[in-house]
Image (cartoon, rainbow, N blue to C red):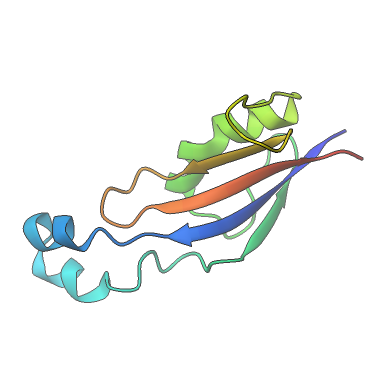
Length: 104
C-alpha cells in the first residue's frame, strides 16, 4: 500500500496584506511566517491518518491532494510522476508543500 511523504518547501509572508488587514497583535508575530512548520520538515502519511504535529487547517487544505496521490493520481503539470505541489490557504502566511507518493 502506498504512503505519501509531505515536505515543507516554503513559508511565505504576505507582509503588505498583513500590514493592511491584520490586527496589531498578529502583525508582531507574523514576520517569520507560520510558526508550526519549518522548511525541509517531512511527514509520512498513509490512509486515514493525519500526520502527528500537522496543522489541522493545513491538513484540511491539502488532504485531497494527498488522497489523490495515494490513489495513484498524477498531475500532468508537474514534471515528476506521483508528485503534487500544494499549499494551505492562509492568506497572510501560507505554507507550500510537496506531496510525493511512496510505493511499498
